[in-house]
Image (cartoon, rainbow, N blue to C red):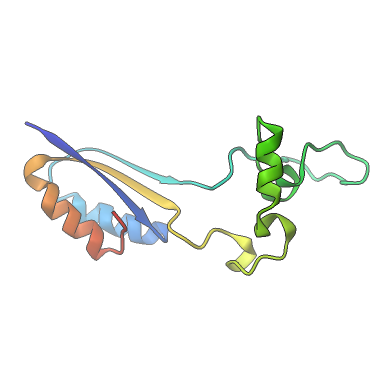
Length: 124
């Protein structure tokens, strides 16, 4: 039997969990639930004094990004989130669709699975 993939993006883990529980009634080959961020890495894992400590860039210090390329760190520092002047969400966290539900279903169940994730608020 053929399988089809669905990549569904949600605003909250609760929406994705609800969709996943409803999908359990279908023939699912595999699932994955992941939260992602626009910046790579975990950044600084300890408190440091930015005046006396050595840190690679503002993106590392404020966004928690581990950038392999110095230019990427500089570009990330241009983000309003890095400056602290953001008008984003609470605690300056991502307020968009940062939850990814990946589902592999049998081809016969694909359309029904698409209806389920859309009804739970996904962008597919």
